[in-house]
Image (cartoon, rainbow, N blue to C red; front, side):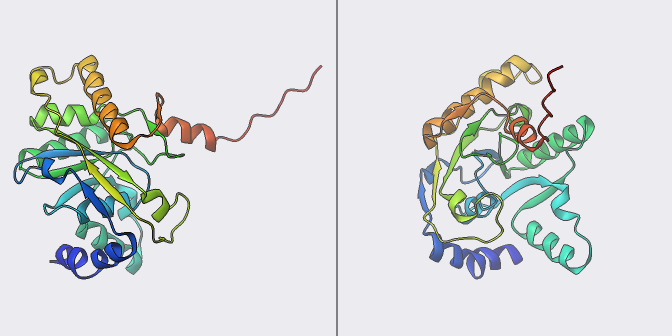
Length: 235
């Protein structure tokens, strides 16, 4: 009920008024059955615009930290994130990551739409970064198609490092579903899964026109956040 109120009576109308989201390729979204919506990731607002522009409910696997704020403020945040389809997961180690994959497969086999950002984090500079193979494993284990999704303009609505949203036109583009049934018996093969993810990322690059970087965005962010090394004095 809260989800319906947010989408149709509260947040949704404000987002439509301020950003006039345009949708292309919505016919590629199946009316029923499980599917993965694999999107580029420019801003926090991506997870709000994607559910806004399609009729079916979308579930995202969100960082557990989003749900960890204490007190009344934390309770309100948890209620909000749950209402917009965010499901808390632990990604702190390999065992937790496998649990997240299992949760995704469970949702997909139950016929749900699962929103995933293959890059694993927001782009630090608007470019498209190397995808992680978890999306491929879930697609194979659940036997579902992957639908490429591109967000355009959301980085202007909620720029990195800011909390205030700004009015700006947004586009959401859906590509044709990618069918990986030819690899049905090869789940766990890292070469097959890498090939699948590269195909997904190529589709996102083609849809978005973003420059592709063959590095993980998380690695780039960690490198940028690391303190500069002190130059060695000449002896």
